[in-house]
Image 1: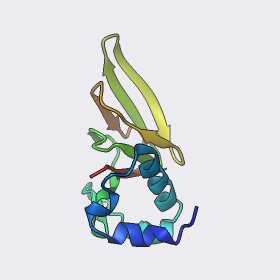
Image 2: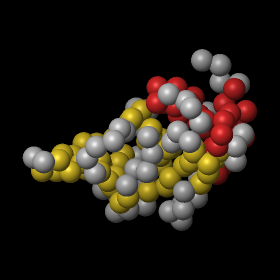
Image 3: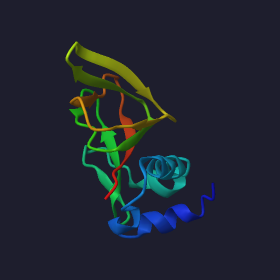
Length: 130
């Protein structure tokens, strides 16, 4: 993939990502995640999500130890640390560990939350279709 297109995409308004398929959106997340020089300096350790440039549908989340929240995204990847994903199903609660460098795609369905169970901070990149 051509990484030179990433800053152009993320510098545009959220209309720039409207209409992307989930697969293409996952590709955008993978491309942006591969360029830490672009976003690392934007990470804040106060728990507030950071929008990347003007793109309202692409953001960083910093997870202090014990923090829990709905993923709030169609696609995400963990950039640093680990997150535990808890999904509530008819059979009970299913849990899995999300590690760095893997793309997680969400569809409609069961309620879920992410939790940072580790002793240190975690960082994730999230995206939604407009």
